[in-house]
Length: 170
Image 1: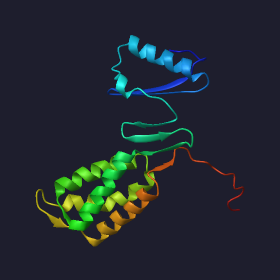
Image 2: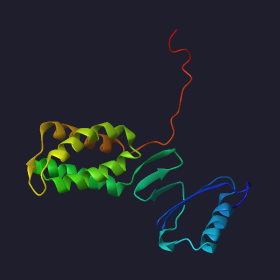
Image 3: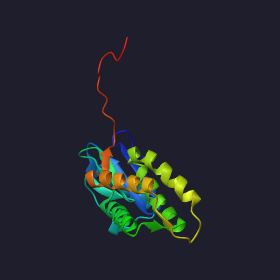
């Protein structure tokens, strides 16, 4: 809509919008917001902000270092839950389902964590509703590993940097 002189990437999720532009981005962003207003997209002005680092629907975007991850609030929630669950050593199906939903959300961008969710899903499927169960040693080990990973970094590079390593084998 803005033409080739004003390239823009725009995404609207419910009332959370994201507009990414390059070049003369101030002008491009103003034009994009004007078009959104003309088409009556639901904008909440208290959510409008700018910069190269920002939260977007629970994800953390950092264009200056090309990193993406989950925001601090979600990271702290996961770490707090792990700490509480490992301290009490038991949980139930409902709580585990909620936590796995949050881990799945996080694993959309923190893809290296996905394989560790498999055993947690398998264990959750065996739990009975509203019945407390002791957390198995394997799940505790996975939770310890996930804690370590989140404490190191809740972001990862948003693009893969490939090196030209030459010939791999002959």
